[in-house]
Length: 155
Image (cartoon, rainbow, N blue to C red; front, side):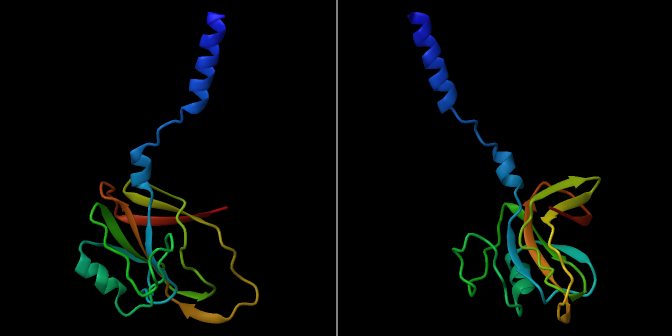
């Protein structure tokens, strides 16, 4: 009877305990602060935004689309995070379609290249031909060191 009680107790403890979530996983999750289909430059480039003034300058004059939990209003600009690097990435020029980045699945740094995985979005068909210069402002952990960015689409 004692062995049965110990076995039941071990099963209950094993089922109720949940693995702790690594804080490093939460810190490496990128956050999109702004994403817009117009306002970027015509060439693919990125820059690191170092302070609140540069951040507001990057947002100024653009109609900001804030991606997040919906707690921020469209008129209220996102706050500059102090514990992460903020990256302004211009995606270049496109002839048609919406090329804004609305979700980042995963990020990693290999050989000084920041690899960004985004969901695949199908473009084409009967779209209006409009030239767009999309950009995205997102965060990465402050310890990431990179001098190039590569975006990969995945399903």
